Amino acid sequence: MKSMKIQKICAAAAAVLLCGMMLSGCGAQKNDTLTVVTTVYTTYDFAKQLTASYEKPIEVKLLLTPGGESHSYEPTPSDVAAIQSCDLFVYIGGASETWAEKLIETSRQKKENLRMFDCVDLLGEETVEGMESEDEHEAEHEEDEIDEHIWTAPLNADKMLTAMQERLNKIAPKEQEHCDAAYEKLHGALLALDQRAREIHDNAKQDTLIFADRFPFRYLTNAYGWKYYAAFSGCTSDTDASPATLSFLISKVKSENIKTVFYLENSSQKIADAVCAATGAHAEMLQSCNNVTRMDYDAGMHYQQLMTENLDAIEEALK
Image (cartoon, rainbow, N blue to C red):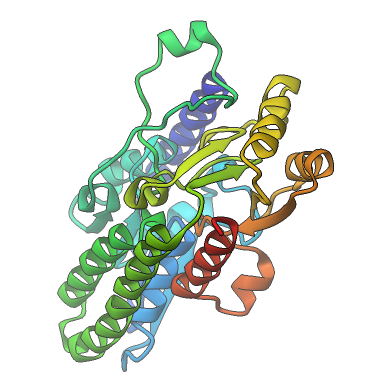
């Protein structure tokens, strides 16, 4: 529910302000290592790829614990200290990162901060037919929320990459040649993903995707004209679908003869399994690239690899 989400945001913001006051008197330790802190896996991966050939030592930190629940993240004192002392702080800028804005106000106003919401055109979260909705009374008193998963559309990811390249070159101009070379390679890969998605759309026999889980892919489906039905919106804290929502998804799979039902990484998969058991469809995972499994993190999986797997699965589903 949004009220619970707001309580968590306020608690996190208060903790950040307290930590900020406690740590503001502590100067950052001076060393030769360039440090970048990011809030989600996509920006972490982009920073790692852009700086992989730097001659100067570089440390890139992901605040989310791989395999953890990203929507309930709250910064720890050590996270706050890392953000305060880093050379570049990269965050998304949505409602779940209100704590980041508070921290910047208290201790990073004169430092390099990159807000990815400023790089792309934003879309609001939406409730489509059959989706679990917020309590009507709460919804009347809440402003429309922006969907935070801006990176799921490859061209959005490319804009984010460009902004990061420019900011890294600002703070480490001596490394620009290395950064630019890495940028050109990754930029080409993101454009190729966009072209692949367009071809999938043009050649598909169907245009509807079923998500028996949260739905963090609005930017992706909006970019390529795919319809979707889902159990929950992208940023909800809910994980249990009502009988009505489950019945709707089962009915939609049957009526449209859909063979693939999607779920997310780090999900229990129980809703997808229930839909598949009732319809004979098979379950397939899509990567939100908000966070990744511990296995993918340890393997150093890149955004472009994860999105290629996503598009492979979508192409098969739309056949």
